[in-house]
Amino acid sequence: MKYLFVFIVLSVILSGCHRENHLGTAIVKGNVKVDGQPAEGIDVIFVPVSADGLAAYGQTDVNGDYLLTTAGTNIGDGAVPGEFIPTFTKVSLEYDQRFVGRLDVVPPPPKVTHLIPEKYSLKEKTDIPHVTVVRGKKNSFDFELSSK
Image (cartoon, rainbow, N blue to C red; front, side):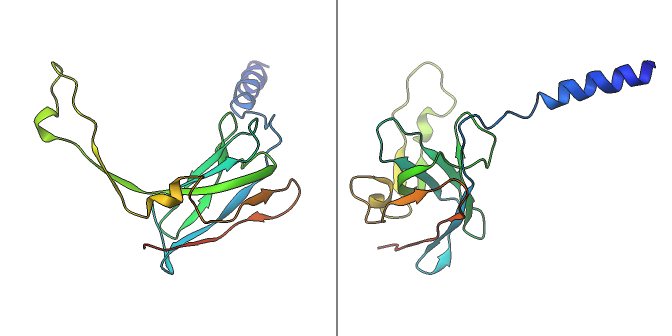
């Protein structure tokens, strides 16, 4: 009886660790290539066209594959259905080494170098077509970017 009680308590506790998908998101995945090659470490953000929509985000792996997540859901739960502007960012940050570790001054912001063209990160300038995420459908979107 004692072990049954422990089992029930652990079951209740562990079942609370998985957050319910209360936003009704749909799984969204795909692949990103730059100049025909898989692109690792690119931040993928689906910016909603609707002002009241929620953005979804992910990052490409070594094969260029990504899986989106919406804030407030479990990792990989996807995006809320709707129309999105896909954006892509990959940057390198260079910090002024004279300020590293110092707590007596506010350091200047790091130098940002875009490793893919900045236009892909700006919803107003990107030439990537909008995508529509639909609940109950396969939402797989592949993208080919140019380094120029």
